[in-house]
Image: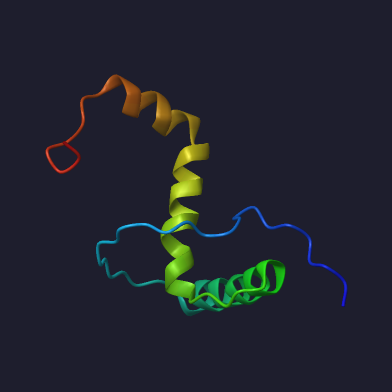
Length: 81
């Protein structure tokens, strides 16, 4: 079998989690499930779609220059302190 192209989201680190529930369109859920399948193929370890979402959001926010610039200028919220 041909090795899958590396995905933007690499192997998942172990982290402490807080439960968060959200609703999304069925089409997005289907895309997330497909991504999870490709991630499992690329890295040889099955992962639940729900486990990918926080890492995807983290990668998105890390790549958002506007957010990073504003986050550096403002003090942390009480929840972050």
